Length: 356
Ligand code: ADP
Ligand code: MG
View (tube, rainbow, N blue to C red):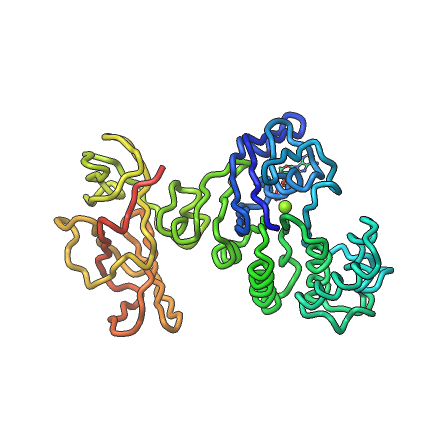
């Protein structure tokens, strides 16, 4: 039932505005892929081209082996959920969920059985007789989801479906969506600008910046091995320290960090003499009493500017010359460094990468 989706060199122009650029993406049957990017990066436009509400300026889209770009939206067999649930206000829950089947002129017993099953899946079977205005936001979103999956779509598209819900409901709906996706083994393309949603829900995340796919990988890889500065700063917290590459050997480099300290770092394709950004996650930075970083690689002397107690962790901001380094340490068994304390921060060569 679930289908693969392939976007081949998709371009979208609105007049002179190039909003989707060179999209090449192959999504496996049953895979949950998230488009993650800031507002205006082209996520909705990309989704609308898959759904058939927008036409690509160039390129092709395949569902399974079949090109769908010339098919009207209603013939693509794609389910869609939007941020603002868009239920029909004058129809009951049952009528709303039945709608995609009614327009397809399905036989009545078939409709009844499928609506029942869809409402069971979203745990809303007792609400069939209600009207949308008699439901909470979270309940309406469940009905919108039931309506999107009632006709066994080959693929489900969701555009910021949790955006209008409060925090607790959002957490709950995340888990529900993941459960339903697994139960039906559905191919899902999910759009969000929220990194936490993307990291927890997705098999793979397609990070989009200014209309371009900048990295497509699973959560762990994106977090641990971002391949450029945009991804590193968009996903999780990061330190990005200007550096200059002095010597290259086997994919590693000797670098001058922040214009003063020397260090060793993994490179991502840079050559001798180039400038880049040394990327290291706050939880990979050690903090200790000032020891004189001068001769030690991958270390900077600084002063604690701010120490924020977070329960299990402390988050330090350490001023090192012109740079502020963020450090996150577990509190258990670790000394505490108050604001104003001279310290040395350091990191391991294997925990840092030079990015462009
Ligand atoms: P996102 O969903 O990532 O926030 P969109 O896909 O909605 O981004 O928009 C991408 C860019 O395309 C934005 O600059 C937006 O203003 C522009 N855009 C979207 N729809 C249209 C349209 N119908 N006509 C002209 N420009 C549009
Ligand atoms: Mg959008």
